[in-house]
Image (cartoon, rainbow, N blue to C red; front, side, top):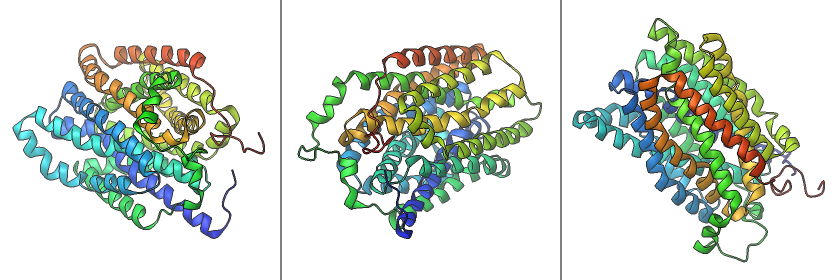
Length: 419
């Protein structure tokens, strides 16, 4: 693939890392600090906090396939991505003025409403944002991974200032999300330009057949679709469940709660900083080893990290294992985008991504979040982590032998001339 070298080409790239940054800042804040906020501000226990995340995953089972189909039909039109961005602007007002009146009605009511709202903008909305930038990378001819660096920088920034904001005023973290969402909306409306003359790069070679329900339903007949879905259920979904209440586990190594919160903030910032650095060469690395192999490498490292956390209850080693997430995320994020592009029909890109990488994943998170919350309370973090780690190891081993190889040219790993 050629890269734009003109000033205009560069200008048309730089808006997308800002888009990634402003969206994933909110993602990092919510998934990094929501459990702690629910525990300290709302008085939720592990089971109740797990129910919030289960609701987020459960409701997204409706949003994910619908958003995927709409995205494939809209292609590069921004209607849906702007709707998600505007919805994110109300995170601050929701937790400041809406959540507590709902809590007065009952914890279940508050958890239910919060799950629906956050599912719309995060669990459901993430696939909309990701496929939008991935397709833009094809029309504008830049590496998706280089735009995704903005998301890594957002994670580092959120981790660095999130702990400070939380200690100053717990609600301040959510107002910071509203500010980031305002930036996202402005970026989508005024900055991100799509090179529509290259639209064939995201619509596939065969443009004679319209995208219809028959074509969409054909996805479910593909064996590889189900294997990819299983991979996400057994790895990425388990990662989310493992991560949801990790801050509580981490703070157990400290005598003072505030000390643990700050240490968690600094550790997570270091992890995401590593992710930021590795995101730069990762597209080149995945182009060399192949997207399928990148996915298997991700699953292997994840299994090691979860099992290590279960078997080695030592603060120093826990921190080292946590930093491995800085390698996991670049592997997964670049590999999955290239793999879906190279292994499936490009016209169904957003639908496959939404169904396999998000819908199937959220099914697992929906059932596992409450179950894991119960296990955390009943048998402890380490025993629960042991169970989760074994699941990841078994699924990764199975998929290593069954997931098919992608087309390297269609995936953008090599140019057609090189092939």
